[in-house]
Image 1 (spheres, helix red, strand yellow):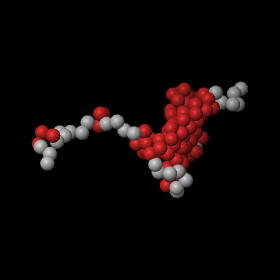
Image 2: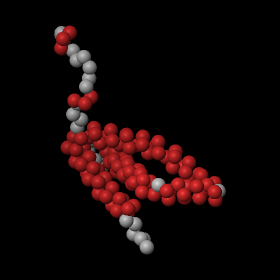
Image 3: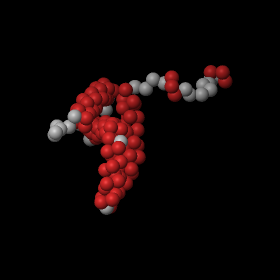
Image 4: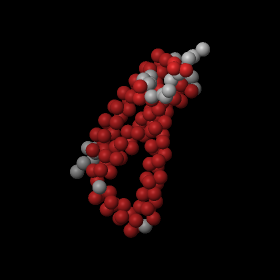
Length: 135
């Protein structure tokens, strides 16, 4: 029997050390939520740009005025999308039995998705900041 003074009073989330697989799972959920939130403004801008010439030029001028900030935001959204897709592919492979659901395979596959995300993020950053068809 647990005595009254041995019961935890509160759970301090900051002191819990999550395994790498839990971190990957949490980041996958967060990236999905961020993509869900950002899709609304992106579709609204697309609708406005396609509605009329005036709407198109409003969006065009807005993009020109905030070119580097929006380019950076586009890169961040691309990174979030890359991570979500790569982690989603890992999850699908595990769900269909192509990857064993063991702790060792989980840790290795998480390290692979982190490495792929970093590599693809750098490559997308190069393509965004230094496009191939520069004048």
